[in-house]
Amino acid sequence: MVRKKVKLAFIENDSSRRVTYRKRVKNLVKKTRELSVLCGVDACAIIYGQEEQAPVVWPSSEEEVKRIISDYYSKSEIDPSQRGFNQYTFLNDSVIKAKERLLKLQRKNREKQISNMVSDILNVKSSLDQVNPSDLGDLLWVIEDKIRTIQYRIRGRYGELADMRNNGSLIA
Image (cartoon, rainbow, N blue to C red; front, side, top):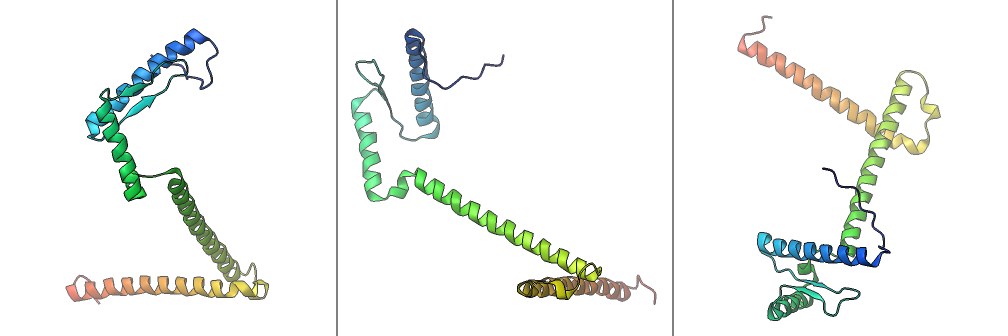
């Protein structure tokens, strides 16, 4: 049975809000315990309720909670990278990757644009006089690249023919 989508907003009804709070706290503590057991990591949950007298704490042992928190603080003093990703590094890495993708796409677009120019010139749809002088270097690079590709293909074909002759499978 499909559950309906939960609208994430403040629950106005007090009794409904308290019931939801208790259920969510129970599930959050359960997930924290599962994460700790299944992955073998130190995990701690401290949940302060709005109208609760004391916070819900997992693990229930005060010494264990203190040990986990002190380990966390000692690692953060030694090397912040041991604590893991923070939002700044995550966003910074995302921006760097997005810039790299943008540069790659811009290069591809530029190559296609120049290739189209070459095609137009070869099909006499435009002439070299109409090409912007700043595009001539890129145009030359694309033409040289196409020449290298053609030469590679020719060498491959002649290499296959030579191999066939040497093997006796091609009669001259």
